[in-house]
Length: 198
Image (cartoon, rainbow, N blue to C red; front, top):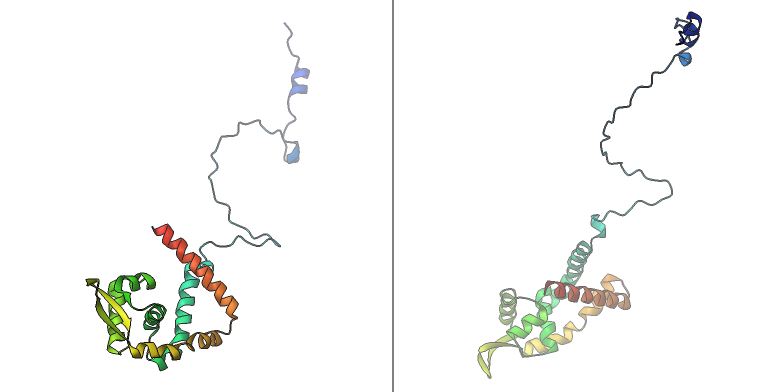
């Protein structure tokens, strides 16, 4: 059995630590590193120069519904001064358009054409009837159903109303082809929405 001499022990021992010993020369103990869980902290989106940010899906200006509501309100507002000389509001004008296209129409047919429920349509018809433009009669083939038909005054009003579309287009300042494309696009949206709701 070999017994270490004093010189061997001294040679194997680390050098003594003095106030002048550099920190880099100090022995580093090999201690186990504890397994500390790292919290899942979300990393904020930092804009990268030159790379456009992802669009916000909830940005108001990107919503189709918002654009449609504002467009409808704005366009209907343009009709108001054009229709005033005819004594019509915009909803009444739509009823007259349907009847100028086909008259008489049953209340159900008129409701389906305008996509208005009867409680909404009935007050419009009452005002137009009071103005002497339409009248409601019982259908000869079905006395339980009402037919809406134009009076002579209602038919004569069509000639003056023929100027309305051109006046509205002039007020908008857009090309007719652009407006027709918008109309066709909205018609497709209406059809898709009705199909989805079916």
